Image (cartoon, rainbow, N blue to C red):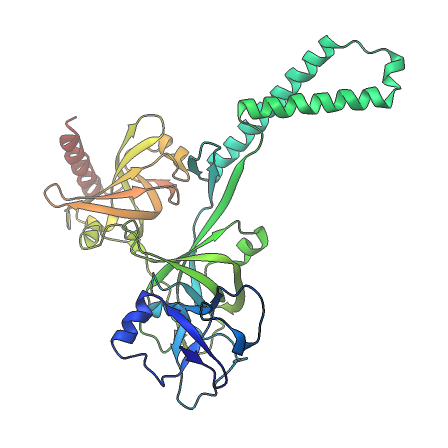
Length: 416
């Protein structure tokens, strides 16, 4: 039971808050600062003394904070407390307010739901093609119906002057078009845009520099333009999501009530604020061996071999130039194998990439390390980007010979 000093109301705690109660961290007489509380089972407004016992305040871990014993009870008009990302619990519900530094804006994703309940995810290029195909089908259907109606009806000049007949024909045309659209599954498209951001914590005197991922559904173009890397925002009303095996990052969802208040870029902040841009570029392949599955990194190196699977899937074997010393000897002879999915951004570049050409991948996901063959496998999915660079210059013959030795290893591995 909670009280503001005048009236009392029951409260329902989530699992994490119940654990705090069992540990004695929340007890009778303890003052709490609450945010985002939800009043449940109240059918209509009434006087506090007339509230039924079925009415309660639902509280979640991320929105409940300890208050000083000198704190005045009652409604607080101060700004919502900033919750550091390090204190956010994935199953703790809504995060009232936090400050973040935007590290990366991932490529947009488009999710389409079909009438049968299935769904598919597309990158921007695939969505553009799907949109063009959708409207081209509609245009062909409309054209076929117009030609069919012209063959069915012969209209003289007097009928053209009759607005009633013209309106009847237009209604018949629209009815036929709608029925045909529905029959061919092109009546409408249910497509939702998704933008994901990688952010890091901004707090006072914080040593934790971990990152989180924020998902924004249906973001406007103006907001997308403002959410650029290096900018710091105070963000309110984010929903924490349970962790999953695909990514070790904290996952947050924007809601209809989420607001992004700009605090300037990272170079305009006072010294009292602590933040750090995460380093995601992998320089040495073998350094990935100790990472957990789903760890995200960028990689630039030389392609050893590009193997094609089907029409739009590839396996790319690469080695970092830093893994090979200047004298041509292998420093630590590990290679990176990138499994490139069909929705990877920039996939068309791989069809033109040859052996020993520089290539860059962004937003790769670590899968596993094969210690026997000294190969690290990573995945390039719908949010990954591949870009070619200048062709490898064969000036250092020792180093070129070392790259060739990597190619021999790959061919032996693949049984070529």
